[in-house]
Length: 450
Image 1: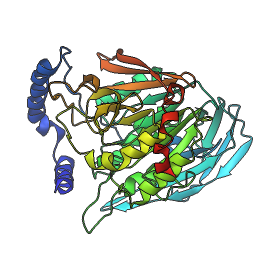
Image 2: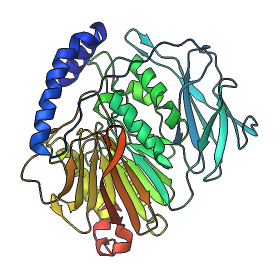
Image 3: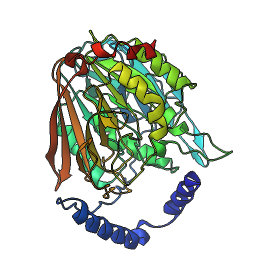
């Protein structure tokens, strides 16, 4: 029923003028500000409007919505869209501007959604590439030149993290702040465009993030706003899977909705909150096999991302992650996962190391960071008293930065978007489970993974 309502409301939004919706938004703004004074001393600024993108004339073969992602060892996938269906899925690249020493040929796809037809969506893998190296590249043999920097082969490495982005003024602020961060890879735990059935919003989102996403790998997993299913008429995740192809095949997964990759001393697992995860599911069995293959002597950090948080003291989305938590938490505890990053709740929260609902020095740090700037606004109401396992929580837009400094220590910071300045509101040093001796004590538990 919820999906049908989103579909209906999205159609209404597409037909009606934005100005006609201003009065309800103002009422919602006042409500959020009143709630803010109750839950926190920090006074949140009002929501910002949805961004509008004027139409611009360009050649039909011009590459649009360019973004890159990791695609196995020393390889990167370049993705883009062209209006010209005859455009080639080729990428020329090299280490000097305008001088391309290599060319790769890829694949393309397209899709239709009700009255919408996508452009030609290209995916081309380039490599092998050298680590920590700037490459210049051109898509389809014409158009502008882009440049990317490959991640380091070993620690230290820095991740930028922001979920539930959308396309609002706060989204732009978040992206501007991330652009100031010297990061190597962007991690996004679901809810990208907030297109919500209006497919042209996928196109504008691609244009919005292109300056960042074409320069550093963006590794994403799906959220509820990516599903876009219409009962009987349309299966879910068609737009997401067509546009944001991740290295699922390279990691032995059968679905683009869950996969893993290794980069700079970290093994990162992206799970799907909206595909089957019980012990009989393909995702569960793939995860079990993937965790068992990780050599923690070589890979000291183990990170997991998914959309719906398991540890959440916000009133929003209470209990929605309980089913997945019951099925999957024993696996990640046995494997010694260091950090879980989730979205969905439009606020920020960080926990102690936890397992089975209680603090546990050998458990996992859970971070909810669904506060990238979406149009639905913040989730300002928290449950009181604050649970013992919850360390820091605040309903503000922002982004996180995770620097894995070495095999034993990582530095996490959360940056609130306040008056267009990235205020560092939360920070903590995290010690890896590898260095704590916890994994030695979990030898019996690790039998779960075998």
